[in-house]
Length: 152
Image (cartoon, rainbow, N blue to C red; front, side, top):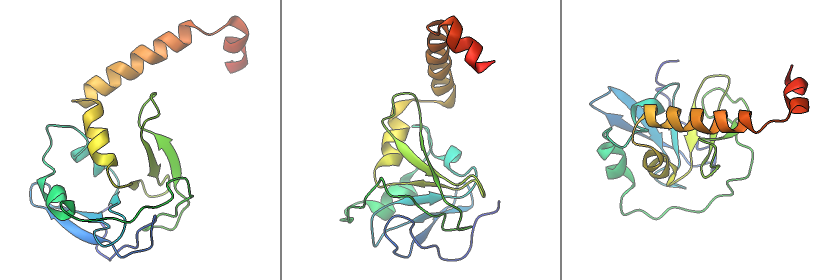
């Protein structure tokens, strides 16, 4: 899906989101600068900013020195692009970060502070995948025969 051009309404607090432009990627990230500080990334945009080496100065400039209202992160959210119900998922096995994903249009909403936490978990996508594979292999090796047969 292409970058949305219309003004979005924040799925967490209902405020209008500001379109913040990345010259480097020629895309807009929607940030709730006057509400909760949440961020909406259109389909596949988050991958451009989720590693520590990737430039997010334009995002930091939009949110630095601002006070944001607190929101209930457990509430179900509706996608601001396509109005589908968003699904809460963890970014890894630790369960530290829960993001809201839209399975219809591919958008991702991050609550205030989650982008920084996400970027600090792993330096690269390869490191994230390696850790996932290690944990997956360990969990599989710990499964009993009956658990394995339940899968089949």
